[in-house]
Image (cartoon, rainbow, N blue to C red; front, side):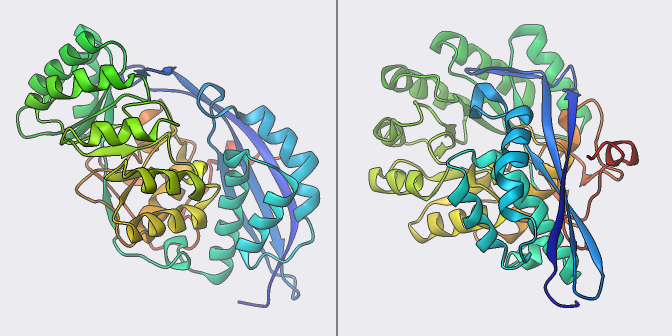
Length: 374
């Protein structure tokens, strides 16, 4: 390491990928058939002329977050870059506070920049990001995949998931109680009695629907109910939790203020931590640590991240001291898309994803994608 480098350049590249046609997720918030995300590249230079490059990813979809690659690029170029260029790279947390001062909300946009900053800093230190974030507490993370659709669609999705090596699943519900029960019953029949199987309503149930659905789903051995009610209805989550099935809060928890509401309502057993929702890798680890202090565990959730975002998920998962490893996480970027944006894919067999020893995120985009940065 040679001094503290300064930020010299921030560049972007747009990437659009189609989901694997047999793994497309359809839930209460619609389908996720493709991703059009923004990649970020930050170059830093030290006082002795040494340079380093870090990569980030804005993993956002307008239907879910209100952000996408176009809005992210505009805000990055006109608001964030002017505030960051020329600044010292460390501490990264100070740069995240700078972004907060000049841009309200937009956590996924700020997260894409934050990932690149952390990647730069960890590469500068010649350490894996998980180490810089305080870990690693583990070097592999169990994962699961979403199942959706009915009839032949569900069967095709399950068959494709099994070919990819997945043995743990969550079923998309929140689309009408009768259909939800039939879908979970079919998924249980396909997966067998011993497979890990949860359900994810994406806030699609009312309290009354959740109260009807959960007892009907319980005989199928569901391991958890994720986001049964609307994001702001933490009392509804608490009411579902009282039915005796573990509740995972996802859309209800973006930041510490959201987590505080969930804690006060005693509304969740587990929170789904996103690098994007939290605003960056460091903040995601802090969110999980705060949850643990109040008896709530964490898993790593997904917004359909591409390869760089999936690598950030992995490093965060390995840096979280009390990850709920009996609840598989959603680090699926190596499998969900028809192609990979990485020069070398993450080490994932569908059952779990493994951490490497390379510095930073340990990944770089393919050469053809690197050539697109401007």
